[in-house]
Image (cartoon, rainbow, N blue to C red; front, side):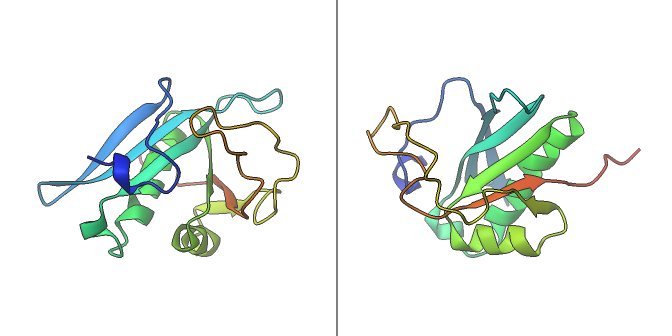
Length: 141
């Protein structure tokens, strides 16, 4: 249902958590998150895919859905990061008090040299992306 609507490719990591967004009884969004292996960050997760079906784009659903997925992880006690090339998502995260830019925000990743296993292109070193950590809200008691 979503595979033809993502700008990278339709492959989703088998280790990811997958979510759907429903609005007025319609499935409108797909999201996937996964753990973020790191030698320095503990208990961190990251966004893996966010896709909003074309008929529902431009309504702010992507921003709310992205925030919602991040808040789920914060509520579970995780840190949550995302990297996106989508200009509207970058703008939203830059203006939102719920997100803070990381040190890699809007920087060309010349340090990345691994290839994407699915379509054999270099990841994040050919486009400038927004990179953010979700600060979120404390879970209400």
